[in-house]
Image 1 (tube, helix red, strand yellow):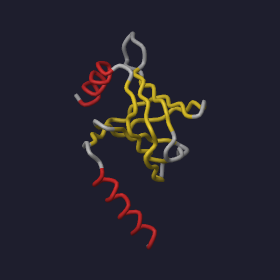
Image 2: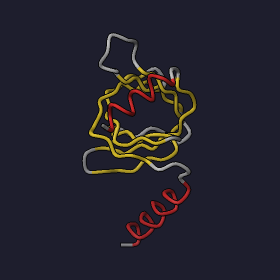
Image 3: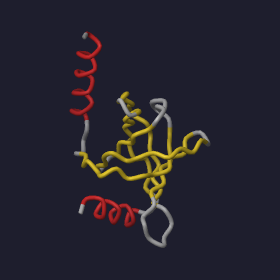
Length: 118
């Protein structure tokens, strides 16, 4: 019980620190590369400052990651560089919170968001 209580308090603190609201997405598949290891993942939510991924294994807090989204077009994938801010265990894996460091093509990013939301 004590662990759950602490977890809820920690979750609340993390939520309150968020500068930009997040939008839940229908699960979007993506490839992520961290320390030379490539994994297939799903994007759960996204916002102006970061995104949340569902992963089978957690990533270390502070680690850097590159995420590749297929735009569904005859274009290069959308590439986002991010830093791991937190990771929470779920029944189906780990929800990993990321903060954007660099978005290679911002126009593609905006189109990706529009298509994901509408």
